[in-house]
Length: 364
Image 1 (cartoon, rainbow, N blue to C red):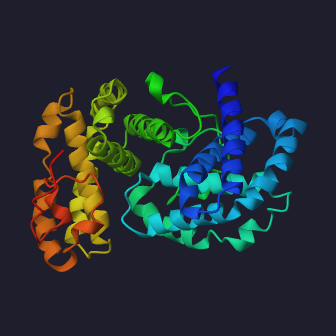
Image 2: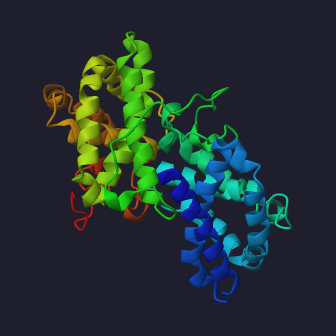
């Protein structure tokens, strides 16, 4: 029932926002209705993939035909939304990777839903090529969402969800759940934050299960990659959002996954050792990727300090990695503060090395 209500709300939101955009002359004022429209477009597009009956229903077709002229009138605002997405990916990456995937899928669902209308040329008029190129540049730093955490219904043609890995040949239903949302975070269009939090927490849990289930620690350190990327996203969100940092949902996920990470501790140790090895050898990474990996480890330590992993966390400080980073920073560092992601605390000094972090960055 709740899913049906959410779908009704999404359909109504798109129609309402489309009417606003059609009647709007000032494109700058169209940013908020365009955001609401595209967020709801993701919900509707996903439902067409999950429910074949809805996808082929006369009701959906009538709704598409009714709203297409409104979107055609509001097309400048949609073009502006896509250009803003491209610009946001090209600048300081202050989203989570999941939020970028949600936005890119929303655009793809728009093209799919309205492909049979006079909006069908939109994909030719507004290319997503630059956006996709930027996603490919970012994916090795930000990606690695486990397949079990990718929302059910996302087609494998939306490759960005799995990048830098390839999408699976076939998709099973999602098997990972997350704690219930707070009442103010229930499903509904426009709540990209709640969707992103769901997927980020599910990514941590899915990767932790994979890590615990791999007896070969040498193979297990490869499972540690998606785990650490997920912990980087969760840790950064906790720094940016005090309500999320203090939420029972985050705490429940940490407590539930701590025993799994205990089982996979050797693989995590090997992941950290491999990070040190990669930094001491031929430096083939970008410095920003090294900083992300180091921050991911620090966020892991912060999140799991007060759990059964405390002894492991206290012992694995990353000191050897830090020694190498100080040496590498003399040649690869000097990142301006404006390029450091929002939420990175000054205690993560490697982002600014060899310079000191700015005084105005608080640790929380």
